[in-house]
Structures are given as structure tokens and as C-alpha cells.
Image 1 (cartoon, helix red, strand yellow):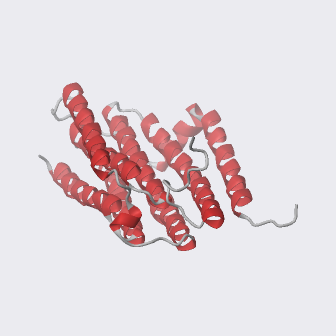
Image 2: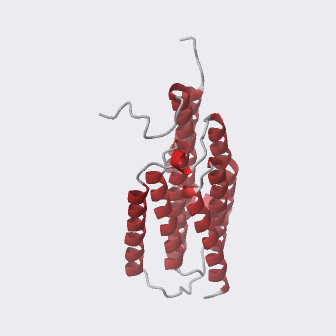
Image 3: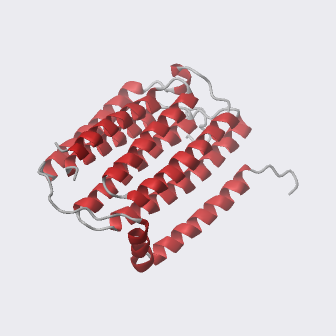
Length: 100
Length: 166
């Protein structure tokens, strides 16, 4: 089997990359893609620990996370398209109506 | 290192390069296509970890559906090309935060998990085993997830349709 810290390091790199993307990107669709990177890192961790602990529960929860991610992307892109229709931009730093 | 670890390292390097390109690409469509590489490498990692059902679900849902959804989102919103148009002015701070997150996680997992090989047999994540676990132990969360998906579907339709009549 693959040693656990190797898989966890890969997931940590993916997660940190997603954090950078969420903070550095200003296009809303690219921010959503970075969130997908972070969710994937979590899924890899769940499957790796499912093998480490010899239980299949981790894989079941990875499936749940995938389902929630699908719902999140659907709603997120609907909101992004709605914002584009109203504001002609999807840059997250220009959509500041709620900013005090 | 055994052969599984060598294969894992190759796949992981491809996935990490894809992830870096997702967050640095100057063209949004290229970013979506690099996302395919990263998601596929995650699917291969699941296969190497003997979680075949999760791997095929990953291919079907992520590579098949979510990336297509992203491409449609990019087509429906006019996306500019170029680094200044896609990134904000705080790249340095973001890089620092990302590096700190990775450093913290790496330090923690170095501390918590030893680098010794485990000799146990892997649990086979076949569709039968996963389904048995879902419908024996997680029936209620499963129903909640399906209800959530239905609510998200209806919500997305309500949000994105144009209705002029009240």
C-alpha cells in the first residue's frame, strides 16, 4: 500500500493551492474552481484514512462530499450567471453592494 | 518505495502541476481544462487506494458533469484574458497564506503519522461494499443528500430563469 503521509502531503499541496486560488483570483468562476480543488483534497484525505483505518466509512463520506460539491457548483454558477446578467461583471471585488 | 508509490508519485506530480496551472492560467478555458488533469489524477489516486467506486464516481460527476458546467458558466459570462483581469492585487498575500497553510498542514502530518509502511490488506471499495455501508449505516444522511440535491436543482432553475410575468 501507499504510505499514508505521502497521500496526505499530496492532499495538503492541493488544499494550499486551492486556498491561494480563492484568495488571488477575482473571476468568480475561477474562485469556484479553486473551491473544487480544496474539496478534492478533502476527498483524497477521506479515502486515504479509510484505507488507513480499514473502514469503508471514509469512502461513503467522500461520495457525500462529491454530491454536496455538485449541488454547490450548480447553485454557485446560477448565482454567478444571475450577477453577470445584472451587473455585466463577475469580478468578485466589483460586486460590493453589501460592503459597508 | 514499491511500484504503487512510484505510480502514485507520478500521478501526484501531474495533479499538482495541473492544480498550479488552474490557479495561475491566464485563459479561463485553459484553467478549466487543467482542472480536468487534476480531477483525473485524483481519480487515479482513488484507484491506487483500492477505492474503485469513488474513482468512477469522481470521473462521472467531476470530469463528466462539473467541468462541463464550468465551461458553460465561462461561455455564458464574458471572461477576459490576461493576468491582471483574472487576478486581484493581493497575490503576494495570497501566496503567503497558501504557503502558511501548506507548511502548517505538512508539519502537523509529519508529526502525527509515521513514514512506516502498513502491512495490512486494503479494504476493497467496490460498489457492493460501499452500497452496503450506505444503506445499512447511512440511510438518513443519504436521503438528506438526495433532498439537498433536489433543492439545489430547483434553486438553480428558479435563480437562472428569466420570468418577466409575476
